[in-house]
Structures are given as C-alpha cells and as structure tokens.
Image (cartoon, rainbow, N blue to C red; front, side, top):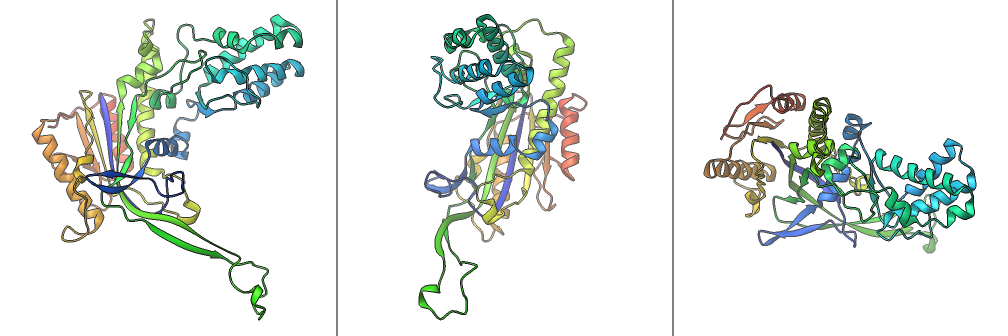
Length: 396
C-alpha cells in the first residue's frame, strides 16, 4: 500500500532554506528559476516538530555525532570507574567510520542516525571490553575497529520509526543501513522565482539621539538579507508495507516474526503515517523565521492511498508556471493547474486508488472523484480507517 501527500502551500516573504551564500535555495524547472525547499530541510522540520515528537515520543532515534558523550554519561551513571569511562568514550569516537579511527575530539567522524537499540549495543560491547581488560592500560590497547566489529548487528536489532521512514546510510560496521520507506521531494514554487533584498539598519540604543555631533549620527550597522515569497508544491510518498518490513526486520530477511509483533508494527506504522501527515501540514522550516515569521498553513492537502506501489508526483502541473491574473490569485491559479493535472493523469493513466481525500479549508476548491473532508481531524480519521482496512472505496 502506498500513501501519497500533495500540498499546495503559499509562504509570505521568507528565507526558509538557505544555500551556502545565505540566499534562498532555488532550481530550474520548466525552463525558469523556482524557489526550492530541500527534502532534507523538510524532513528535519517534520522530524523535529512538536507534532511528530509528541505523537511518537518513545519511538524515535537521534541524528548526532555525540555518541561518545552518550557513552560517557550512561557508563558513569552505571558506576563504572571514571578512568575506564573516559577510555570507553574515546573508543566510541571510532564508531563513526569504517576503519574505526578514534577522533581527537569526543565526536564521531560522521553524523549518525542512531536508535536506542544501537546505543545499547555499543554500551554492551564497551562494557564487556572494559571488564575483560580490567585496567586502563589494557583497555587503551583494544582497537576501536575490533570493538566496532563486535558491535556488528547479529540477527535483528529494532530500529526507530524515523529511521524506518527516512532511512540511513552509515559506513560503520556496527550499524546496518536502512532503506527509507518514505520519499520526500524537494518542494518547488509553482511559479517563477523573484528574489528580493531587505536592506536593514541597527541603531545603538545608547546613542545620544539629540546629539549634533556628526560622529554620533546614523546607524550602528547596516546589512541586507535576501528573501522571496513563494507558493510551493510539496510531495511525500510512503510505502506502508516497506515501513512495516523495516520495523519488523523483514526487510533484511528476518523470518521469525510473531503475529503479535507484526500486528504491533503495523499499528505503529499507521501511527507514523498519521504523525507524518499532521507534521507535514503543521510544521514549517525554521530558516530566518525570527526575521520573517512565515508561518502559513497549506491552501490544499490531497491524500491518496494506492493499492500498487506506483508513486505519482504532480509537479508537472507547474511546468508552465502559474501566474496571477485571469485565473485569480497566484494560489488560485496554482490550485486550478493542480486540479486539472490530477484529473488528466488519473483518467489518462487509469490510476487506481483505495481512497482519495482533499482538505481545502477555504472551501472553494475541489477535485473530481476526490472526497472532501471538513478539517484535519476528519482527514486523519478517514485515512486511519482506510489504513486499518475498515473502509475501501475504490476510485479511478
């Protein structure tokens, strides 16, 4: 089963996702420049959002280079001798690269997406090595590469929901790679990009405003920041079966999966899809938000549940950029293009779906053969019912 989210979302002046020069990210699509929000930016804003964290608080991992600090903190809490703990933390810094090279700083060489089970496995190996060595001198001689190999996954090690959704690639032998069950497109503007610049000044609060002294007049500093205003098309595709396989270990060939465990994984996967939907709708990238506060919600959310794993993005609706004019505002023009494209592809390619839901809060937008829902709560209820197999209404 494949679940797809399509969002049309207009943002006020903002710089939500910057490139290395500080400019809003962009791309060329349909022969013209578009505003862009990278998939990595969108995934992080979702994963770290209050909505996602609250829904899956005990089922999430962490992306960090600070494994050595975690090791130090937990082994100290267990009562291990401080000198052995320091060696263990140093050895843990070698878990972030293939050759097990320890780092000068107490950080791993690469950022790693770790689950609680991964951290426990590392602690078990380091604890056993420290106990076997007995002394600091002997423990220091144990190569981190050997410890890393000892922590290599044997059989199934549970993963967190976010790792199952977004996947991971790690060069360390201690952790396995995970194929993402969720694909996230770079969001692109439905229209041509126009960059603008905000010229700003700052005035020293202690400056004598009444002074006639020339040196004390004017701004304390000046600067500029680039920004844009854009209506984005966002697309998410979730392989529900793939997520369940990640959570149960079936994706790596595990066979001994009890029916109760599979049922729990399926229920957790449904929770994750709903949390992802809510977070995709309610969260916004944090770039320059203190300066722009571009917190706008989507104009329309289309959710499709497909029986076949044939993902379909509707980005080509905007190959010809949307324009404000006879089709109404820029958002209205974008929605009209989107609706026409969805209907054309659905009919032309006989796209099958188990259910299709549309949330358009302003109430003046509809798509043929798509069930309108009144609000976000109803959207989640209707989607959950379909995922649980309680309702199947075939369209297309």
